[in-house]
Length: 111
Figure 1 (cartoon, helix red, strand yellow):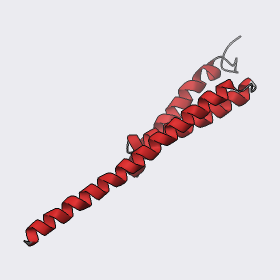
Figure 2: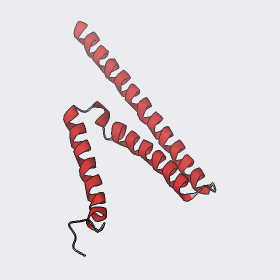
Figure 3: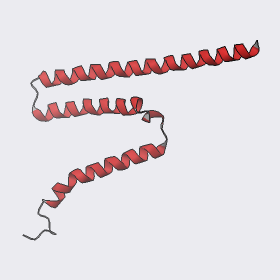
Figure 4: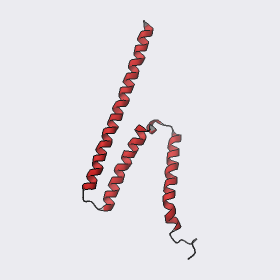
């Protein structure tokens, strides 16, 4: 009788854990939908281009962070994953800066 009770307890604990995760996923989904509506609303406003791009990028960063943290499960990962993510971002910025550095007519480029 106790083994049946223990099995039922494990099953109910597992169901509660699944329900908790489903609530988080639904909350993140609703937040992503709201942020998508905000992005569309920003595009309809008559803002100057730099302000509109800045606000749109901020919304995109928040949406990307939600996807990476919850749907890609990076929120519960170890520090090594974050180190790889930071290294990737650093290389991305370096590659974006490379054309600026090579066409700026610096002292190392003969005229």
